[in-house]
Image 1 (cartoon, rainbow, N blue to C red):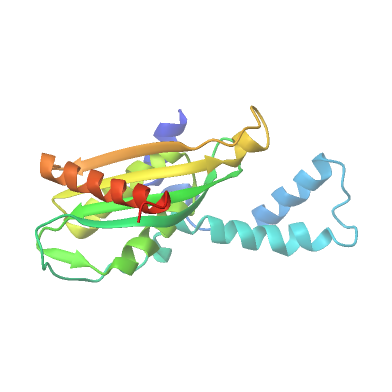
Image 2 (tube, rainbow, N blue to C red):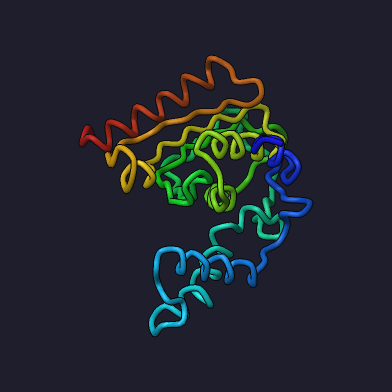
Length: 213
């Protein structure tokens, strides 16, 4: 079974985790962190390191994998739609963990959706991106998960998501270079008008970032 098939067993379209990978096992996290310390030649019981595997790493992992647990998903309370135009939320901070190297990648997400009958508060878009990001994943998969998940949550007729991120697995190992990677995903009936409105928002952001305003 490849990794894609395994993920299909454990997650549904809204990113909710089911099956044997559901939940967080603190004891396994402790044992794993202890073994890693031993693997690199550290005594896991020495002063200053004991709490690393016994408390700190498990607590960190529990936080950074909240997106794998449906009970952690923010409540997406909606209200009657007030527009049929695209709603664009830019520069949402994004922090996630690469499933290949267990190192972070970070950047920003730009999210846009065309409401159906309902809208959601803008802060909920930030909370939803944060929740989806807190899992072991790839940037490509995360971009898709955010877009398809929001489409399901909001009943939106169109969703566009763009993620730009820097990967520590490139900076700290491998090519050891700092570069940005951009991924995009469109879901639903994305019209030419939607694409143009999204591009205009991105151009305004770029101009403001470059001091154009």
